[in-house]
Amino acid sequence: MVQAALLQFDLPRVNIVRFARIRSREEIYNILDMVQPKKDIIAYTVVNEELAQALRVESLNRGILALDLLGPVVEALKKVSSRQPRGVPGLLRRQEEGLSPKIEALEHAWKESSGFSVSNLEEADVVILGVWYPRREEGILMLAERGIRAAFLILDPALPLFPNLEETVAHSVDKPVIGLQMDVDYLTRVREERVRALGLDRLLYKAEKEVVKEELDFAQRVYDKLGCQVIDVTGLSSRDLVNAIMSQIKKKREEMR
Image 1 (cartoon, one colour):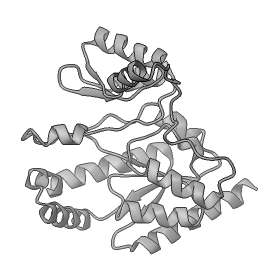
Image 2 (cartoon, helix red, strand yellow):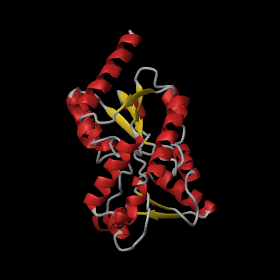
Image 3 (cartoon, one colour):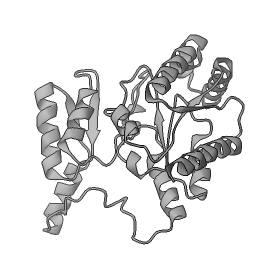
Image 4 (cartoon, helix red, strand yellow):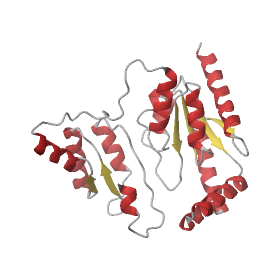
């Protein structure tokens, strides 16, 4: 819905950041800390009335424009059905009991490959950070085919770091945290080709060498701070990258024995 609305405007450099499975007031407050009043908009689908109310009140207090996308539909259904909504979050995504690890990993891949969610890092078998993951969906699905649930987080110096990222990663002692690095010229060339192929000339600035270098330098500082294992993905195929990631997972599991 947000994408459809954006298409009605000629707006350059619009970033959409998605947060899934919000379960507490603390998560809401952490997200609102990242929002710039009068510059950013929050569009939400929170079905738990207590959390939705907390989001509405706190957004109002901070002068943040917050749009409830799901509430009006729920209210309309309540009126025509004469029934009360369950108010249970995650019903659309809830997994059936007894799913195999491979199916679980595939479900996880479809849900968590956006690069903007930190809500389910504890469920992942590996955490991958980077300014770009070449052929991301393909790679994450290849890992899922091996029963590996991968969480991928995008790093961008133009955006705040994810709330509590350092603390969350520090607690991920049983899983590898991998940073993806690559050659500046390689990423510059790939980005330019992709932007031109998609006809997104307004994003050509992302393919400027200075911008790419700034992003990669920023990512390296994050990796150093978090103590990540770093994989150079320059020129790697999806299969080669997956094999490198699997090697790190195997190494971590052997260390935990």
